[in-house]
Image 1 (cartoon, rainbow, N blue to C red):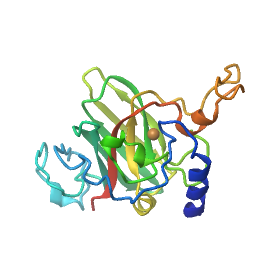
Image 2 (tube, rainbow, N blue to C red):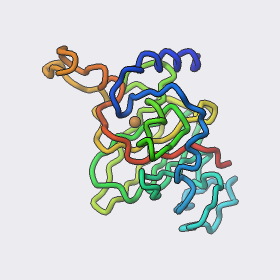
Image 3 (cartoon, protein in one colour):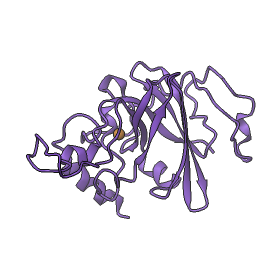
Length: 232
Ligand SMILES: [Cu+2]
C-alpha cells in the first residue's frame, strides 16, 4: 500500500469537511498530544497478558504512571482519556496469525453505542476536542465503512463499562505504529455509511450517504482519545 500518497489524497479530499470524524487539519507534528492526559490513572487488566510481557505483573489497578508508555497487555495499546483528561480505559492490540486482535476495556462512558475508530494522527488534544487527531485512519482512500480504521462500535452498559474483542485484517500493529495513529471513541453511534437511497441528504440533495457520512459515519463529537503506543 502506498500510504503516504493515499493519505495525502485523503487529506486533500477531506479538507472541506465539517467537524467530527472527517475533519482534517493539515498541520500536525504527531507529538503535540502525547501529554494530553493519556498517561494518568491507568487501570491495567492483566488477565489476558501474553507470556512475553512479564513486566506488568501485579500492576492491576495501578494508579500512578507518570509519563510511562501505555501499559496495556497487548503488543500495542492506547490509554483512553476523555476531554476532561479522565481515564476511560484501555484498548489493546495483539498480533494473532494473520490478523490483529483488538480488545477494548472501557469505563466511565455514557451508555449506548459509540463510534469507535482509529484516527490518522497520534495526537490527543482535549483542548481541540481531539479534532487534531484528524480523520479516520484510511491509507487506501476508501469511503467510511471500508476505512482501515473503522472498527465495530462500542456498546456501553448502563454502568458505563464496555468490553469489546474482535479481529481485523485491515491493519497490522507494525503499520499502526509506523503511521502513528490514535483510537477514538465518539459521542454517537456509527452508521458505517449505510444510508439507503430512500433518504435524501439536505446537504447534497442526493439520495443515500453524503460526503460527510462517507467520511465520518455521522458518529458525532469525539468523546475520548488515546495514542497507540508500543508495549512490548
Ligand atoms: Cu472517528
